[in-house]
Image (cartoon, rainbow, N blue to C red; front, side, top):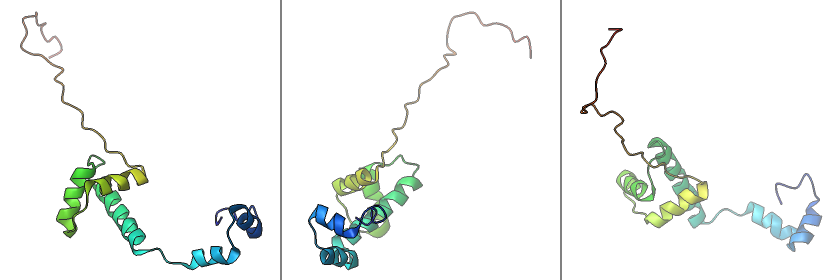
Length: 114
């Protein structure tokens, strides 16, 4: 409702969503609950650590790093939910593949350019 106040009247939106105007204004003034504040703080910590480690760490590694940094233990599922909420996906490391095989029996040409 807050985002669409320029397009529609508040009375119309309250009627559509079946909420009272006073209830809407009370909701605007209300502080977020403690759990929501902790979730916001955790999301910030997860995001900074995720980008600090070049987007390679998943939920379990981030959980271990968070435990080392602030001493609080989090469930990896909580960290995974935070990553999902923010749309952060860890990059998988590519496997090393050797492209040169110098131990072969094929003829080797002379280096003409030196």
